Image 1 (cartoon, one colour):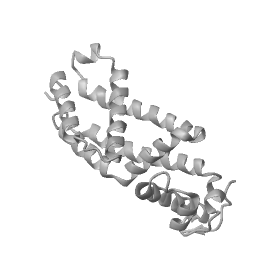
Image 2: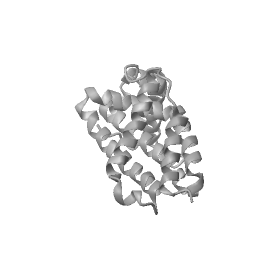
Image 3: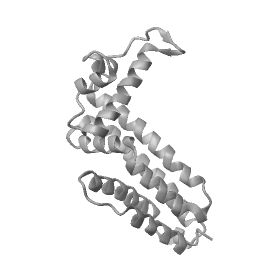
Image 4: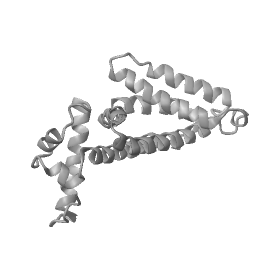
Length: 202
């Protein structure tokens, strides 16, 4: 059900403000209580709205969580995208810091919880699959940067390398979620080795 525009508040509609509050509440619920703890009532209570407000503004929990997934993914790619702006010699260290920060970010936990939840929701799986493809494309940009000017660029299956790297990122996040110790520094050291091997740090 589409939300009515409502009255202007500081240049934004009441409906827009309510949707923003619901999205922020859903992210917090996912980050703190996981997918199973993120019910419409829990989100509404956290957002300070009536219990039916989630369905009024988003139609269903799947629609809300799809929106949350896209927002969190957009923010993640924006944060990680800053790594591509650093000089090549600084890339491994910048990537190490960015990955560590990303693992600790509440939106990263919320993103992962939606991915896990999509396994049991065909509707939610649609935006998640699209988001994974976006992640593959972004990772391809990182891989291209790492092997730029290197003979590796001509011999490596770069699309496959990008898919493996993006999948490893999600996989390591899942391992951390269940309490497995994850060697983030070791993972990014491998990136540094690839950079040196490809001559990208020269």
